Image 1 (spheres, one colour):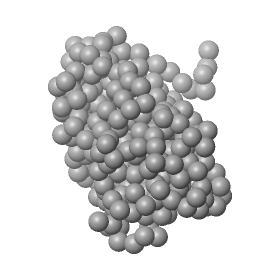
Image 2: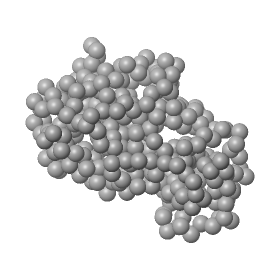
Image 3: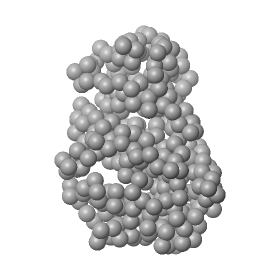
Length: 92
Length: 224
């Protein structure tokens, strides 16, 4: 069911699509995110309720499983930290 | 009073009476909508209603059943079993057949795709089908932000059956997914994953695109 993820760009694009879909952010805004863009606690749309939906949608689209103990504020802090996590999971 | 062709009916399922919402004429070709489950059902309610209105605008009729223990059902969710939900979809399809004189097309969304295979239909159309295990993980994870299962209290047996459920292949079947979803599909539709939003939202363009594709698929199934 899930497409193979073999390249870092695909994971990047998927993460941006999930941020648009789950948080309801504008595509233009998310396209402008870089590694240092602050997410959790900085975006009003990215609250604790949204975290569950974001993680589950990432699991579905990347074909990965995320354990609760892997989730903390550091991992959600910036676009870069979330992307690093997603790549490590999807490309392992 | 006219509500733009909106009507409520009841159907009998295993000795119970459950409600169905209909938009469109009784005698029009019927589309049975099997909605997403639990919280995703609430988040997509406006989308589903939008699809039903768009279907009615294209000469069809959209029918949305309440599953046991959901919506206007007089039953409690706590006593609802997985088999009850599958039976409700089957009984609703039979009701549509009896009322319209035509075999329905089934259009299911997300978790609805897990319970749509028992009913008699001329074809199946699915949007973003999801394994039950993924829904269970999401509902459990909702506990990170407050209440597990977002306050719903399904029985352990229903949770167990949901966790094991995957969409059963049907013929003829057309699968649609959002364009942002990399998984394979017969068609990709642009629009937001409303079932993921923490606040319910609507997406008129997605509703219109879904209805257009459903009508096209219905025509293909009638011919075949």
